[in-house]
Length: 335
Image (cartoon, rainbow, N blue to C red; front, side, top):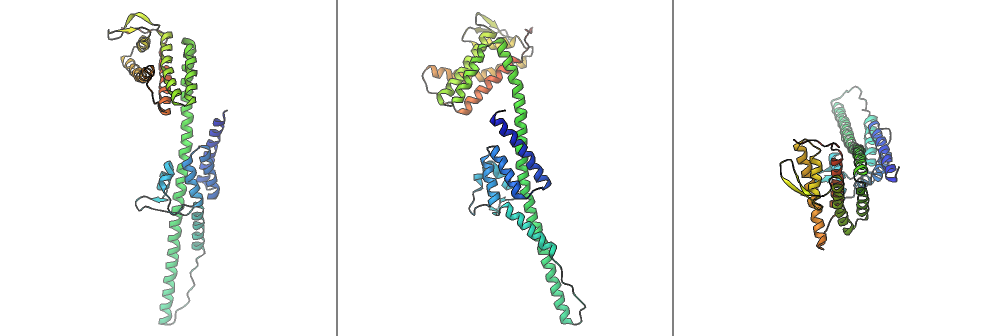
């Protein structure tokens, strides 16, 4: 298992333990916060690390909650930040927990003073005033405990929401990995069996993306175009004879017409016109981007390709190979 795999596996275990702690109240809040901070560190979640640090130490007087980024939602939903009034609770969770215990002790230890028989009018008034004061103290203690307890529970719910979101994100990552691993096996098997030269192009694309310079990203997308051409060469070699599509339209299938050759291969292996249209649309989308970059580089024009654009283009190209790989191997008549 890679270092990343080990880290993600550990994060999953920590998320499970954190949820158990929060749902069973088996630990004090300071230990729960330490476990939550560990999860944030394992997930490389800098927003959560800042948020949890403030929950542990308390919030500065002039704190800007926008700095919490994606974790601002937990501060709002838990009642830490009141967006309408523009106010927030600055105390740390540990301080609030201590306030809950203090309020509970005051409530539990309150004992009304016993009042004996009243013999005079003046004494009766004094007794009633004392009883009223005791009732006010008791109500104040109850209100204090109720308010601070509600805030504490709400803040704990914010931590629980974070732990749940992280756990679901890890589960989603596993599901996505399983899906892509299955697709990868299909694609790799197809490439090895039908167009082994394309494997070299895939390796080259990966190396250029890893280099992560502007030139390497442009080169990666140029290699994606060559990859599709290589696949077309293997599946539907260039010909001087036009190919007639399902609508009776003749199309050139020479060396440079790799899109038409891929369409010809796919068209012969699907009896569904809607599926053929979808595949054609996907190919046009990918090829338009790759062809535009190729033409600019041929003219010596600088092409500014972002990391995100390059990665998405590579992913789309690879998944398109998956679409081809999943087509029936035998030729299906379109008649």
